[in-house]
Image (cartoon, rainbow, N blue to C red; front, side, top):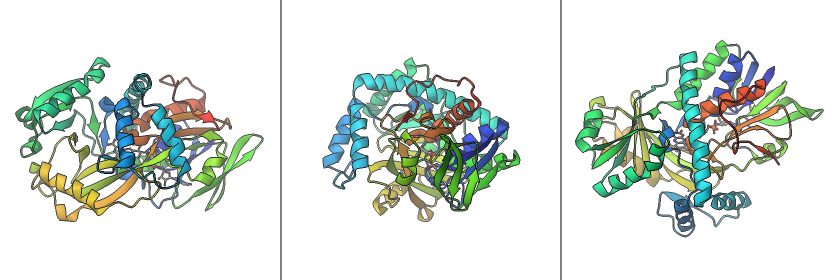
Length: 415
Ligand SMILES: Cc1cc2nc3c(=O)[nH]c(=O)nc-3n(C[C@H](O)[C@H](O)[C@H](O)COP(=O)(O)OP(=O)(O)OC[C@H]3O[C@@H](n4cnc5c(N)ncnc54)[C@H](O)[C@@H]3O)c2cc1C
């Protein structure tokens, strides 16, 4: 089949790869001038299957409601804008913030992220792409013994689900990652199966590998609408003209409202902004060997070749990609505090990017009104961890095969 894949972030590029491997004629269409220009180009780099905690939870209910009245915490909400989309999304999100829903979403998310990490390995092996992959564990850092004890309690449910962790005092953490020698920490929880890598590099190399399999990649090409005939998709209307297709995969991250209305699906996906800074590594001996997260600040860090990336913040403020200088300055300062002397703090590159979040914090797959329009959307806060599984699932659905994991709770519905 000739299949148009709409959007070239993690979801789109991995899907294009799986479809091209299956022998389809793939056209990957991206409105930006380069692959992985949105969230997939600036994320925290951690494949954090062991942290597949659902966002909606009883604890999050308190945080979210508090954020409606004060904006001095890690989650910020700007509800004063009249934004019906935010309120509709927010009500669905709050509706999931109870213990029974949390347990259900946790089971669903863990089942899916495990599968997805396996598929990331399979795609990496099949394609041979380089992306500064670092396997063998991720550090979750705690600054006080009390915080470390809370961190140990936090992973108990994940231990019960089969993930393995090592609890480390500072000396043991430094033995695994000498870059932590000067970090102000009491200890760490080391998640042995998590890994990390540069998802932008992965996407760009994988898109090139798709071209090697005969796929076409169209950049600077915005999808303006779909073309329908006989209740099916027959093509895509783009700024570069009409493209005929036997089917399409929507992997658009955040979807423009005019386009969303055409897709015939219930797509409750709202942007949650985060800030990202990337710093050149000046002295690798002083930098981290493994990716990690400073849990007291909720900031992730990840070595990516000769650069260090730090990301943090969760802000509900619409589709704008602006960021406050204070947010990037906080990340730069943290790079200096955790890894003094490792990076060139004066040459930080900062940007904001938007997580395409569903109210459940799990993605959506399958078809809705049109039988040949598949969805791979809503990767939210863990799209690097979740993309490869979604790509395989989508290719299986296109081929009419049984999917590698059951899709209950992950299926898109008709609008
Ligand atoms: C600060 C931050 C840190 C994060 N850290 C992590 C992490 O450590 N680990 C992890 O697993 N996940 C992380 N994530 C989440 C992850 O980055 C996202 O879930 C993932 O990038 C989403 O991928 P996507 O392909 O769905 O969307 P996107 O990356 O947004 O890609 C969608 C693409 O579609 C294109 N597009 C949209 N509309 C059109 C159109 N009309 N025509 C053509 N093209 C179009 C866009 O330009 C874009 O390139 C983080 C996210 C943020 C914001």
